[in-house]
Length: 342
Image (cartoon, rainbow, N blue to C red; front, side, top):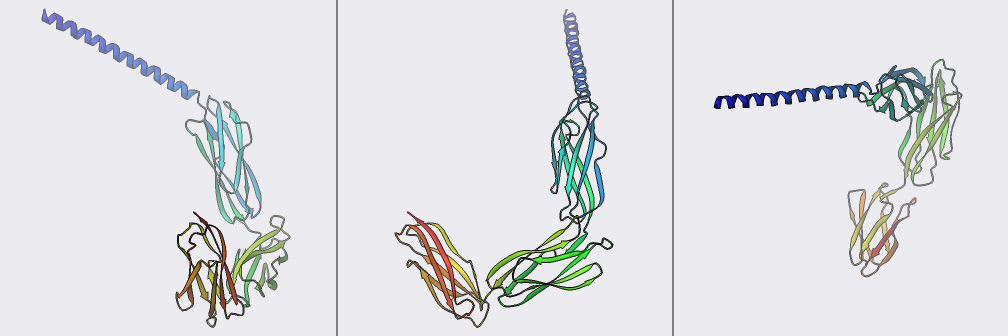
């Protein structure tokens, strides 16, 4: 009797397990079918080419290329966005939704501007393609200058007032290009341009800085005009700083916002460029400000400015006056500002 019961239990268990396995198999078959069905209706983006080489182009030239693509899938292809690297712009030039076997284009524009040499730029196309949701396109080119300048930026550095300073500007044109330099000019009154010599396709100019009458930093441009259609004008930036017998930093003292009855301190570094110059006197205002001066090294001094405003509240506008025996800078005024709250 027990054997018969055991046999029945085993048979029942086998039937249950068999049905469960069949169910799992059916679910797998149905799942695989659904997956294959989903894959079969998915879009698939494919480009004719993923790289375009413009070859040799001239600096300043603008070029355009259209990347063609096709939807090889069964589902509708949707272009979500097109992103391009610096220096170029890219956009979808056809409709956003591309059906099966339909084609589209991505138009890429590149402005060579001031680029020189071999350049590569990337464009990324984002879509609902499940296999390739982000496609990378590349444009390449070798950019040649019809007209080149050396240096491309002129830095005169730090110059003593009254001291002459000059640099050489070299302008080269592409051999055999028949490019001519029509004019070289600047609107900065203290720079004089002198045509030194011409040798073949190379022009040399002396850029001389003379008679600057103001202390401080300066900047501007030198303009080179040519008969090139691609690069008719080249802008060459320049900068520098004119100093006198004394330099100081900072050129103004701002204490910002402070609480009343709180003593605060700022410092000024003064450098005696001319070693014969001496600081003769220092004055400071308002009256609740004080100072003390100490040597930093043989040429520099540290002026510590203390503000102990007591119960005063409001806006402070004062000055630190430094007097010296310099003929260029007999008096230096450093503005002082602060806002004092309760």
